[in-house]
Length: 513
Image (cartoon, rainbow, N blue to C red; front, side, top):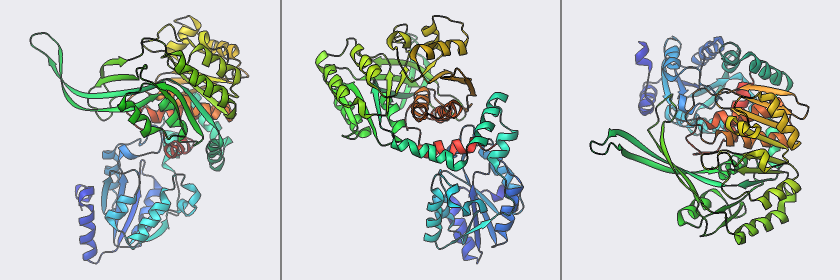
């Protein structure tokens, strides 16, 4: 059979397998990412094929692969091409789903084969394989474990194909040799016992997708055709959603307007028990409305311009007093208080005093934006934090220099706050961390194929803060934050939070050295 004849579309997969079964063929199915074909795969396919007549390999399409930053290393075309040139494989199908359930339902295999490592159910952090087994049973098939020679695509890619710096490779190797797979799972699962209070400005990110047509002939105005739009939770609400993926014991304290649309949005994202947001008609809910061009595979989202809806005045004292009363009564109940200060009015002087005086562990994310540039400076607004993170412009404003030594200034800030952890995130290049002993940590950006940077710093702060309050060492806490940021830049805005399952898959994949 020619290579091209082996490729089957997902839409036609069920029809193909029905015909093969009607011809009396016994169908074997293997499913996976198959990012780098190695001898372990060859043996796996050979042993699987020996169990029946036809071997169908279903492959997770690249947009649905959740093996961590930079994966898959090879795109759909190259992975399918590699499989097509294996004589043992009869048919290949790209599957537009993150798990195997839909592929199994379409193939309805007589035997579904997985590698022998899956005989130990603890190897699958997602729990997806349990669903695979149930689905195979539902369609009348059986599960078999094959592959007497075992390799790891992730380990091979990390060892021989990664473009990380020597320092980051050494960091990953050190962590991989220090922590077992089970220990890492325990660390992440222990986050669920933490009680977290997120305080700060809620921002809604509105994306209007337009197709630019050009300039109008008379006024030379940029003309575009509307395609669609979405409203997403940002700011403190985005950080809250990231945190909630790891612990259900989380509350959000903030201010918001009383607009019907915003009230509906808050109800979508917050239960009554989680919602400590004070809404009032005197407040304008913050919306950052970005006009963007349609996304293209492999390219960063192109933003044309932004229109911001903001409060011009500080919130009424009667409204903020309700926040103060709630905060004074409840703050001692939380293991972690995470401040998301975007400079839009929630973090008043009184609230800043309370969180700095009363929080058991205080994480501060004090951000610079176009509305507050030069005013919302972390070391002018705060004198204490147990952990903090800031970017290039925020660090420059804090130290009053355009050019600076990152480690020196990070240590200066850490000393100022008495912090145990401090992070300086430098966009798409690297993050530098420092601990209470002044020891630095350097970690490259883990995802090079960026879709949208909006919210990546918030994702980093959310998970790094959980690691910090849990007193994990700086190297591991930094990597956890970097992975969260890497997952976030693959998402447009804050469409979805960083999922715990995706985070675990990424963490484990990247530590296979």
